[in-house]
Length: 303
Image (tube, rainbow, N blue to C red):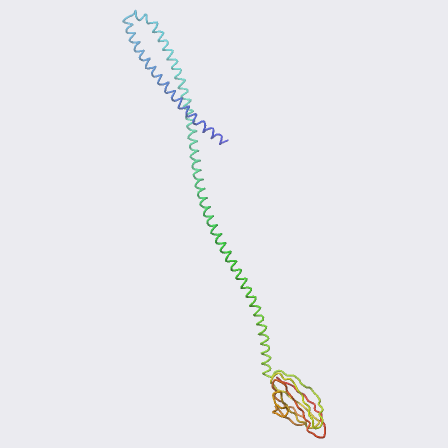
């Protein structure tokens, strides 16, 4: 509704302005014509005065023209009355037109104020639009910068993730190698402790426990054992007669006639003899030419 009123006002304003201009022109023209007639009447009145003077001077002429003068005067009065009526009507029209003109001028001023307000609002809207457009481009620039930083960060993340995966694989391999190395170390440490204990002669193995050996007269019996490490053996024996015991190893040549570790003789004794890695031999001899002998022997290997 407000938009239709504004359109109607825009259409009526030029029409009213043109009407005011036309009425003003007509009023001016009427006023000029009226002034001309007043001047003419004034001139005729002066002429009439002269005529009256002349009439006074000349009654004959006045009587002749009296009737005509009266007619002219009546016509003039009628014209004056008609002119006055027209003038009053024009005055009323002018007053009404001036009132309409003031109302139209007020409407025009109001429309002008509304236009100025709208123009200001439009200017403000344009300024806001420019600010918004500026903010939009700034935001777009920030977005593009952020997108570029995001792409760089994503590339760095993927690169670091790949490096982490490779490093994790290397770590797993290193961990596996470490576990294998730890197992090898534990085994070697165990072997080291075993060898250390062997060096310190902390291990022992019973080679014989109460073994009885019967040896005929003038004969012998050889016991052989595998001794992996250097150490010693402890031999305890008892015999029904005197016997000879020789201790040697595979490192000695021409056993039992070469070099020997130990030689013992008797019917009962405990003794120790060193041993070397390899084979260890214990030879029990019966030196009697007439009687056999029975030997009971205990042997413990310390290494």
